[in-house]
Length: 556
Image (cartoon, rainbow, N blue to C red; front, top):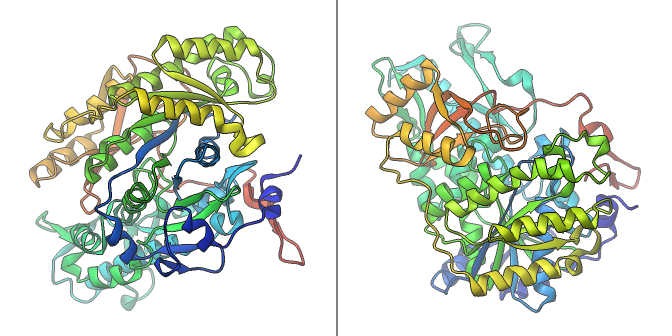
């Protein structure tokens, strides 16, 4: 069996100008990065902004398991299938982060015959967007520490610096560091921290900004620290905005590449669904809706995390109305939720399936809370039995969900035809009445508890003393009416990753709360969620290599 990277390397790619032409993009509107990658021009986005929108379809999933769900693979395959049916379709994906690529995942470009290419480029440096974000973030950090060193005219309290440095790599030793060691000229000694680039506020800002002007306004508002008297200090006060914008002026432009079957793909922005909301950029999605009749996009992790943020943060801020949701599951993952060990998932086990399908049930209910029609799809494996598939199909139909099997990993677009037809049927017969879960006018605690109780199934929310104090402070500073970006582990509906299936009535603990003022939301961190992940025992990096001809192996 060929690996993902072998399939991608054997692919015959079209010049990106030919792919872009499928959705009416002319060569003059492309800024080329070689033959197979390009950015969209500002002129194009301005020219199409008044066109009617196409249909917006969100792909989300159940809680991820070691068995794998294949959400990006389904997204790519569905776009390819739409094209096979003669539809003017486009997919809108998130860019992979180097941290997971060299850490746990080994890549994030889809899989099998449902991939976006050039796969190596995408999984590595791509067009440099994340490097630009890293540079802008760390420029602000450098200006902050330099301000303190050069007399501290703003009266910044070094104990209340909240802006963290970042790097796009999993590196646990950077979570807590001390800077400024050495002599007097080496800066003020203080505790500092790193986050992974994709969890940074700059990432969230880039993904939510409408244009360059909006980007600058958001960068202005970033809170970097507090003064000795407790007043917030912003990036604007450090005169950082102009230079940060200069670093980001190209990164804010959406990237266009292609699938293995040459369907256009706008790949731009944030993979981290815990902190930075984890959705394709607003600019990319909005532009896609003006160019195509169908835009298929994805959100990070399951419907409890990525989809909730897609609806409550991205769609609310951008004024977008999703038309349908595709909810991805696998028989293997549902049996895992039912208590089956990973090595035994290939065996038929209807009892375990019935025990684990409650996870899917909760995600169906979560999507329904936003009043958007839902199609459930199973990413099919050869070990799935007819009895298992029939049980799940019946389960979904009893809950008012359309259902389709997907075989896009093996067959590409052809394997997604059934799903594409089901999605089109849903779009044509069921009306979306999209409504966010909560009103932003509610208090911070009320919004947190609404998400925790209605989306996760918690019975009670506890607040660590520091979190409770932070909430009171933020509300007194005028940040009480923003959306909430909940940071929770992805493996469970609860804040305990070991509680699989559908835990109910549990207590959830809010450990930390802070405002991302530029992004426009308050972040609430639960449990042991890390904004700087670590590497596993055997990182994916150990399997990645390059031969004497420059051919990369080991990416997936």
